[in-house]
Image (tube, rainbow, N blue to C red; front, top):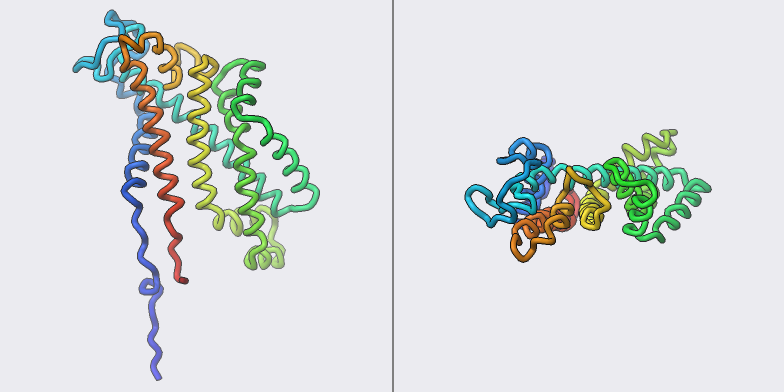
Length: 283
């Protein structure tokens, strides 16, 4: 009797397309990433120069109006993109990469190391992120490296908890036990056996923490504790122009819209990523 052989390509389930909301969110996020890199070189005007037309309305010369010193708001927003997007991206790398690496090491090692690290993380989780940021900034001053470390360390415990819960489940799987039986080291097990099977939920958590860090850094800048003049992120632009809300609303509204579009885009991309099922050969 002949047996039909089905090729792996034929057995493979069709890949689900990213929903429209996810496509839009990813496109907007990619746009702001591009502006964070190339935006300062594309500005139509000198973002640091002082103009004569203070709080000018939207016009052909100033597509987003001007600020309290007569500077073009489009130029200011593009100059602020590296500080808002770049700093948040650096901070979330510190939080997610550091928390995930520590969680996988703790779950794989177990014993006293896991217990000590988990108790330290529990202690850090009891401190609100904004309160921790305010204490650090008030004690050590404001600088870009300090802001990145403050946001990264503040959100690292949450990333650790999510990654550890995943790592505990994964490290009990048969393929991890087989790697242990082969005598593989801790680094091999965590990087090649555990991490690939944790990647998607960790990536979703990465995007969520990026959103939180954008809001944290923007909030600090709005309070005057974030990026300092002459540099400015989007939170700083809202703060310094709030005095002219009644006469120059675009100078306040446009940076706020930039923050909103970035956070909503990341949220849409995360929801779409979390909703997609992993492609496989089984049911």
